[in-house]
Image (cartoon, rainbow, N blue to C red; front, side, top):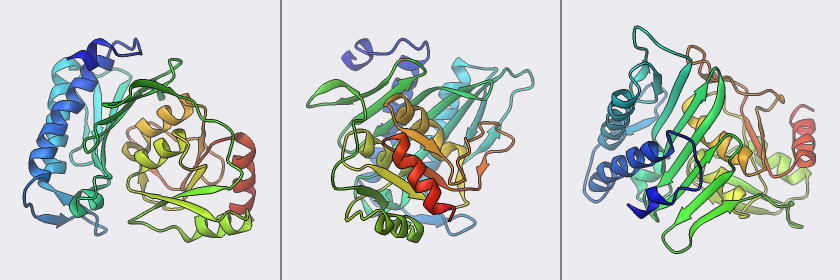
Length: 273
């Protein structure tokens, strides 16, 4: 496949993980095209057979190639081999399950890799539209689309009209209050954490605020390295960094992603006031 031959990053796992994501997308798309049931997990979070089947597929493919890596996934929890190393994969098989159910197209596959607690690789793939985002530490953030091929994403300065990325499924009152205090008027609605951060990276919005205490490592691992390699700033809402210890994967202090450090400081000051 030409897409795999032309990868702009040299990370040794990049081609394999892209192939895994593309094959998982085939499973997801076949289910998406028909009728399917929706179940609910604890906390009333929806889940479908597509979440579970794609999750299992990704785990199996990664486990076959990396028998000593730990794998933490949304649908199957933590998988730790008896003799494990310091590499951990974080999998969200469908980021934006509510949008998958609504058939809006605004959902993605997310796969991130941390080594000794530091993010080294990330992938976000949107099956509807075939938008692929990949990044590796020190190698930049790259976007591939069928129409434009590979392009490097580099976040520019904030727009004159401040734009807030907002969720279609989980509105954040704090985010809107901050936006009002910053005299922002424009919003960009999008499903999924990864796609919102990539929307900022592509210039459709300037920042994203989420004050949920339910964010998990698989929600943010891949988007964080992508966004930071594009030049953005990510932290929780008290200015802390996220942990990628698979034994402590709950991120309890929200999420803030901004296009520049000054905007980041402004938002943190308001959120803490």
